[in-house]
Length: 277
Ligand SMILES: O=C[C@H](O)[C@@H](O)CC(=O)C(=O)O
Ligand SMILES: [Zn+2]
Image (spheres, rainbow, N blue to C red):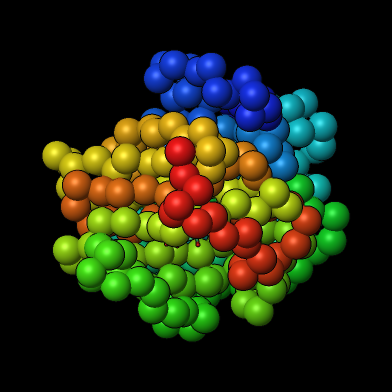
């Protein structure tokens, strides 16, 4: 498992492109028949992906890194499939997870196995795991069941649908919050006006982005912004002090996930566009 340390905003001001990418950008989430994991010290969130193709992929790591005997002994996990139809087997119970469906796996689940239904259209399970000291039921959920809302306007190129899946009023978790935002065709901006929430870190994973397109992801303190160029199926870590917003060269979808002091989606500190520097 790759490790990323937490960062101080005064230090990040001095980073060049390469260093910014080393600390915050996660270029590869999916590799055939592999489990990819990045542990960030920002709220100890694990960001990763499982792409079973010719064989199943088992949720595991060097347990010394987590100081436990099995992965979810002291953790919970949110899973969203962005590939073809797949199944996740949790302690012998099989959950069919189709494209853009979500499975929350509660703390204390011992065996988690990822499978694809069709090797020609493999499942791509995007994973977020946060420490959890209480167990909540393993639950499948879908976009149709989610609390969703339309936001933005084509005039600002930010008409989009926000689906809240794991949060205070949705699937219950210890601290993990997770959802998906889909931009309507012709709309390029997410999360502008931007916000921070020093109470929670956040990770974004951009997908449904054509190969010749990029998202210019904005991060940093509102008065000291930087950008990271993102391609399809890449993730980016947002420390709790940082804005997280982006503009694409086409529309796209992204999964957001948070961990920290509360599970209230609407607990954000808005940043006025006038403040940005
Ligand atoms: O804290 C919440 C997250 O940043 C996202 O949900 C914001 C978002 O999806 C959007 O405005 O498009
Ligand atoms: Zn946010």
